[in-house]
Length: 307
Ligand code: BDR
Ligand code: CA
Image (cartoon, rainbow, N blue to C red):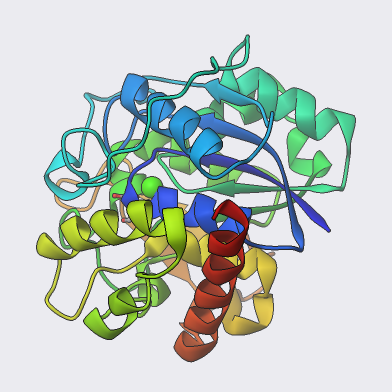
């Protein structure tokens, strides 16, 4: 079993990533932390709490983190994820509260308690992870791995240069990529290949109660993204942890632009290491068929369990 802690901003594709964790027999979810991102923190936290119960995740702690970026005005994506953050999906509101304490403390304390055992997966802006690195720099040694959905070496989605999770808090992203670990960057270069076509969406029906989340969420997500189907970005980061062989990764030095007039939030990826140590492993390719096989088998397993 791989222990994972998810830092997220649900968010339709964050919800689909959490469902992938819930349906993966090799993953053991030890915590969920939330950050302001796609929608405000109050909503990302309410969504994470509702998802914990809907996906039958037991008592896994859910802790809210930073409502704002380190240094900038909030950037939000409710035009993509809807006013609530979960598109057209309507889940029963949570009956149980968030954990006491702050996301940053949950990240630090959880990693400290099991050095080398826990993989941190970040599918939102990197504010909480950066604050955790600043509060306790030793987390870079304690984390088994850090897998980030964010950035790109080819194009942005928020603007031509920048991907949403990075532009939302570029200073935080710079802190995280500059720290002394070698995270895995699952960027738009591969996530834009993970599109839920209408044929795949059809296969989200018939999964019992789980379909009540998957179908409306994916349908409303599809309406605001390209016609070839919405890219399920955040689930790619989870898929990497379940089966890294689905991805090609290349070591690189990644720098985050924080001062560009047109390029702030860009991840500047240098694959030409020369004498430098890599600062990240950057995903460059995805086995798309294998990804969807994993998604569908996990959702089928979870759907059967939830009834
Ligand atoms: C990322 O931005 C958010 O809108 C998604 O949830 C995903 O984490 C994709 O750029
Ligand atoms: Ca996200």
